[in-house]
Amino acid sequence: MVMLASLMAILVPVIGGFLLAAGRQIVLRSGRPAWLRRRLAGRTPAGGVGLGASITEELHTMWNGNKHIQLEQRRVDLTLQDNQHDGAPPRTGVDLDAGRAVIRRRG
Image (cartoon, rainbow, N blue to C red):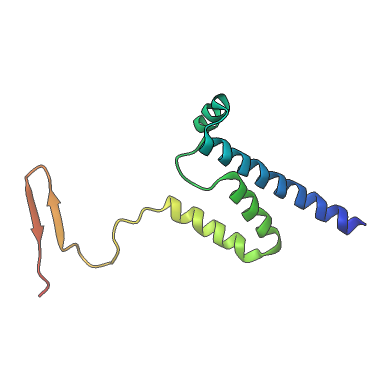
C-alpha cells in the first residue's frame, strides 16, 4: 500500500504537468480564448526547456545518477563560450573597421 501511495505521489504531478502543458499548447496554437492566449504568450520564454521537460528530467535524475551528470554538463556548456573549433592559430580574420579580410594559406 505504501508503494502504491508513493507511486501515485510521483505520477499525479507528472501527468498533471503534462496535461497542463498540453492545454497551454492548445490555447497558444488555436488562439482561443484570446485573453488567455495573450497572458500565456507573455510568459513564454524565448528559448530553453519547458516546465514539463524540466520536471521529467529531475524525476529521471532520482532513478538514474548518470542523468545528474548529464544535466550538470548541459549547464556548464551553456555558460562556457565556444569561440574556436580547433586549437590552431586563426587562418582567417575580418577587420570591418579597416575594410579588409585576411586569409592565410597553409604551407
